[in-house]
Length: 330
Ligand SMILES: [Zn+2]
Image (cartoon, rainbow, N blue to C red; front, side, top):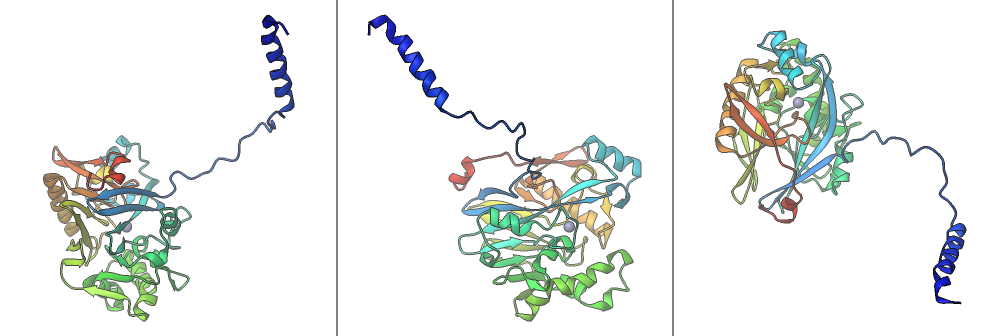
């Protein structure tokens, strides 16, 4: 074979090889769309603590008709400015898993089967994040409402069989005592029925720890009273190596309305006035100190900081980071 023929021979050999490889099947359609957004969790570090935000999914609520202490037009304007439908506002349900090294503490337990088809995904999210329900050592409730405690118990069984459930005594006793039901607005009636069911298997097993005062429940996690939304509503302050994350529970439901106007309340508040007062105070502190904040109903993952703006505040979501996971404290 002369030298100048070699490229031609190579081309012929290559085309023979290509002809031998079967062409990919041409079905004309990709697999069905997956219809899920995230795998259900978001992770960051706080000093030596690993923080995992677990999505329980969403609930869709008519914010226009349940937000109070502001004219409907004002509420509509604030929500529409953020492209939120005031009549059908899809609202995140977030829970927070803190691995302190010694404990695996879950702050709030999601809705279980109590809310619509888009909620109740907490266990799925927990497993996707690398942990099992039986790994959870502590569940700390911000309060006893279905979207925070419904996921404790499903079909009468404890979802977190090895966990100690921490709840403020005032909160548990309020919802567990039927005497309070007729004294409270009718719209809260279902919470009395559901509280006993959610706690039953843990009470029966002696795994409920009712605390009376603020303070450290496990090393690095402190309870802080914030009554208003419910009588024993509690924030949890997580601290490691001087870095702080304050979990707000239901201090806020509609970030696009209640950050600019913290005086706007919601019908879910047992005491709307007290809830609004507490919201103002806690937002002011978060804005002044610049610590991290996590909230149950701020759009997933609901973790960020607060900035003072005008007469109100603005939510600043946490910057996405991969480096923060591999360099604790970073
Ligand atoms: Zn809630």
